Image 1 (cartoon, rainbow, N blue to C red):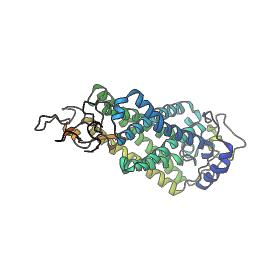
Image 2 (cartoon, helix red, strand yellow):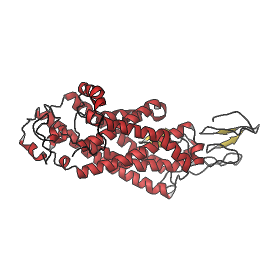
Image 3 (cartoon, rainbow, N blue to C red):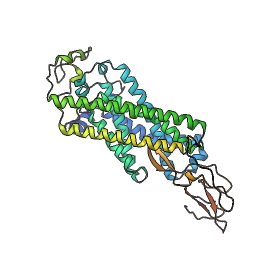
Image 4 (cartoon, helix red, strand yellow):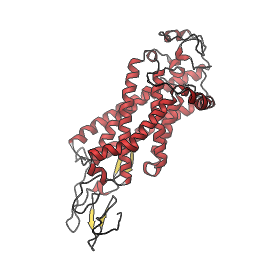
Length: 392
């Protein structure tokens, strides 16, 4: 199936800049899809910088304004994640259904083959992970080493598809993202004061089900399949250009002028040998991603249970200080932790502004009556009372 993206790659840029880089790195199909990588990167960058802030100020003016800089960053990142996961899931499911050539591939085609539709998935995924790596590097102190490892591994794995290498598995592994919309909704519930609500409960059930089924069951099974396909390639040592098993891959896409005689699917296969370093690097990155998924699943269960009362949940009762002021619930009095791709990030939630305005959940007034002190978020005291600012 040919690339369904409506725009063609700019020939001048492809020849002058992209082709030399592709030749050096061995990413042969990148000149056919670099514009999709750039389009996806700009789409998600624009969503992060412009669309999300404008959308949030319009629909949630008080809540979004009450966030500190750290929480606004995470809010905007979750908006991008929601948009990206929804878009890429629709594209991947459509390609898996409509791309007949992909469906007819044998193990050799799955390792060395290429279709334009799978290249489109590769391009959009790579564009997102370039943006993800860019944002993570800028804010590694916020997202932590786990998110950095995820961004590097994911970009590396999907970039290899441009060799092409296991291009068949691009739509397969991108279906990890089926759980991401529910993950983002869970996070938004905390920020919209819906913690412990029925919406969060039902969404949490769907989150755990999709994460377990798509990332752990489906992902582990497909990882085993790609490991086996690569192992067969390494064991065979070399695949002949005239393998009779490749005849069924034609499906009307035979290109007599293709660089390799045979089907268009195998036109970039070259000598069809997988270097040991390539197999090892790909499988290592795949293992990192699967390991993170198993680790995150346990953390997700722990985090979701904290939102609800026993016996299923672990939420603890409220406490009060000596003055009778109701304090935050014990699990929220600690550093609040929320999920970004399964990683915990400190981001306090929003509260509706009161007479003494403060964007926090725990407020104490100093003896002089002019300053406010909070437990977890930044404070902006009213100008008519004091021009000072103090973070608790």
